[in-house]
Image 1 (tube, rainbow, N blue to C red):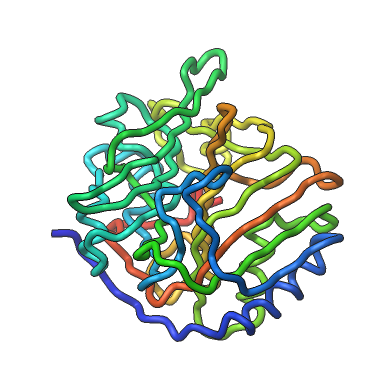
Image 2 (cartoon, rainbow, N blue to C red; image 1 turned 135 degrees about the horizontal axis):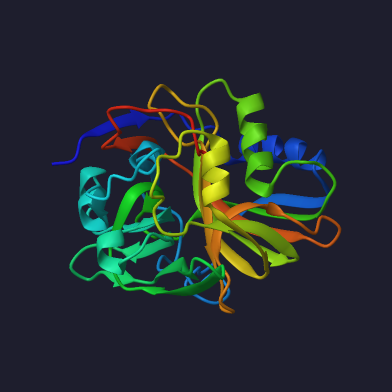
Length: 308
């Protein structure tokens, strides 16, 4: 059985969150718009998600953690999404979000976008990005037909139902924050209690700095510099479809506060850092607020290295 701690949240209204997002976006983008809308069908292109909507008992789960990867990988730490959903009280629910792959299944470490309907009628539409050739820095983004992941994951869970969500667009970055930094900064500034958010966003135009993990390091990674020297960084082109989870404040659960991975129909994908074309970048996203945070199987020893 997985160790699980549930932290219920007092959600602000969507209208209040809109005001927070607008204030933060105004400092970071020349154009922006935020509204409450009925969630569109996210199974269609360019979203290509397993879940049609972001509503129905929404929650976020922080599973495992970076200390399972750094300084040295604990490759036995692998997780089944059916079990995670059941542990979070959402058997048969939908799960999206960034994680590492189950390296024992793939044969190598890689970035993963979980995109799954759990349960007996399950659907798996997940995508992974891995380094094919460590010497040549060649990567590929492909379908991942498993409902297992490894080491760490930041997941948004819900029943995939229609309902009211927050729609955000932003263009022409003028500040220094990335898209998710910007939204989360607004929440952290305006709300005393933690606010947890999950959903999806597109980088519809422009390019972004992404990383892709290579094979596991043969020596311990003891600093952020060690981690950055090990990771492989790339500039990749939109449109890029992201799944993202962010939490404004850690209520003492040793959370990763922001995490976003992406995939595309043209072979690009990885871990999102920031856009590299501020004058032309365009974002569009749909997000919902979580009712609770679940901390699943936290590492017994922790640190703050490699949480960018």
